[in-house]
Image (cartoon, rainbow, N blue to C red):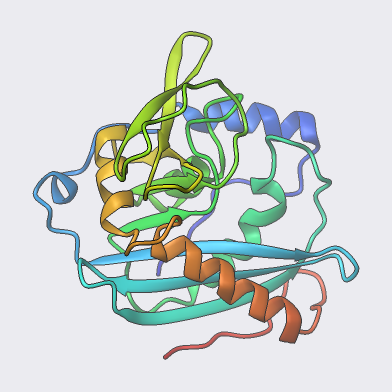
Length: 242
């Protein structure tokens, strides 16, 4: 997958927050034609696991056929983490390693799922939006926990959802993917609207709480974390294809 980053990652937290506001102007909440026409053939899920002892991030991405959700390819990468932990700026810790893994893909994903927030972010530009804009690819944020906003509990039915609201603005959806489980938090990343993001999240749940692309990416990066070796600065250690 072609990856080109036009900005530096080695910024201060203040510079990073300003960059998010600048890049937010490029966020497009309108679905591309391929999404509207249901021409999506490949969907990828991406996640990262952090090893605090080794100060290392292990990123992974898995590509699936759609709608069958058969695995086509997976790639992993690792990097030393240099950016400090600052809520709302996690992309500057996790983004470089995620891009390393994405750059290894031979299969071009039509849609990306990130285990992160997108528009549902204090500056309306979380990791899913940042990655979508950088890659100029439709992207969806699918987070397991709340970052910002308030909501009413959705009905206990698969596909039921309620708006996630902050400052009187709907910034995402609180989606019940199956009965009797906690909801997930869906937000637009880039080149997708909220309704379409919800539809794709439900299409990828395969009867489980977490949509398959990010659920399996989470399992994958935990495996990499336990088997990988901490790299030197700005290096990748592994890439796997199946």
